[in-house]
Length: 328
Image 1 (cartoon, one colour):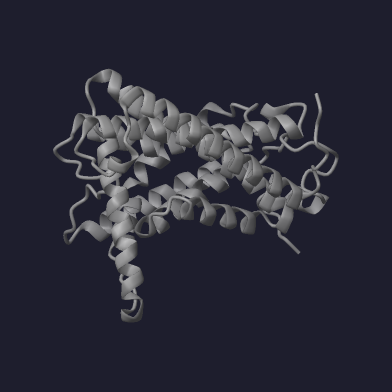
Image 2: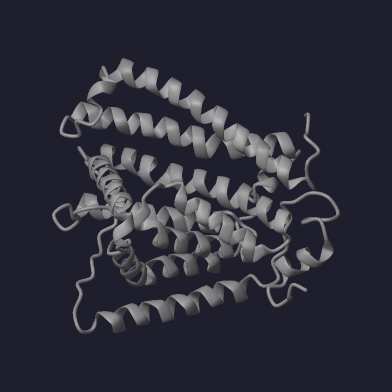
């Protein structure tokens, strides 16, 4: 099959994936819109009426198509057009050690209190008086996003639960990790010749793309966590699992405990005199698990990038394989 020879050309790689995203999301949005209108009689002029169950179901279907078009299809096309082995190119060919999955599960559970605290801090952020108009717009956008999230987390039986899990957890976990970690992170590491800069750039883009300003820092934190786990393990399945647990737990909590979950980003930990200790313990244990993941994968080798020079030079490849190496 035809293969684009752009292995050592990060700018062209970035241009290619951005082009795939742009064309794919337009195509899938059009197709999704047509199917939504046909299935639900979807009236775009009334799409903000979240009290109408038909509108909500139509938005769910349209969101599914848009997410597939933006996140899932472009990296797959990128892998197919740039490599003879797309699964290896996207780091999906390695399942990794079973202990890693146990550590990821533990990390996502144990880090919940600390991330919840970061969510609270971010949500209470106040901009200077001179930027009050911008803050008002940001909070208005945030409320709209929260209202849409609540609408999506509505269920009508067990079948509806699995449908919402696909929309909120499965497709985002697969698609976003494929795009951001499987493609963009590698591009930015190759471009900057620095894995840390590459991970930070990717994580900032990952958080910013959600367009929820008062949830920016917790998503940045998750992006960094997934980025380093991928860097160390060389397997995309680990951040995919972590991402799925993060999103899926919200869906399951809203399904089984609807009265206690007011929105997707709510903190379930009450503030009291012991809260800071609780958050601190969560952070410390999470850091220990994070370190264990690094140690378990310290000898992992990257087989996803083809060619003799995986990231354009041997020194960077050594940095990625051996985290103890220093950039000079």
